[in-house]
Length: 141
Ligand SMILES: [Zn+2]
Image (cartoon, rainbow, N blue to C red):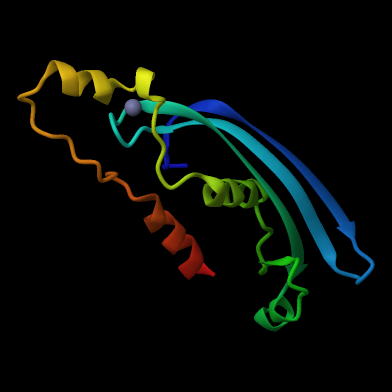
């Protein structure tokens, strides 16, 4: 996950595979992660917790996906076996906050701006806009 500041952290995932009463092949899951993302104020790593829940139904075609009830998200599988790690990662990426900051007392940018009044202002704009990744994910589908 390039959105993360480093590889430290932990992810727990609980996935259930079953066929529901509508004969749909389902993957229900709960994932939670403790990860380091980049603080958009000081650009240092900041630890955050993210969690996501999902209810997926496995389908093979776009038509099948459209026929799913609204409470189910389609997981369109092709010839290749779908990588479960990717599903979990995608769900977590979607649940990441758009921007993350340290608490004010632990953010370096706060102390820096007091200490170096003459320093060039640091842009608030994130270097890597997380939205870009989301757009990629969506256009792939
Ligand atoms: Zn910070």
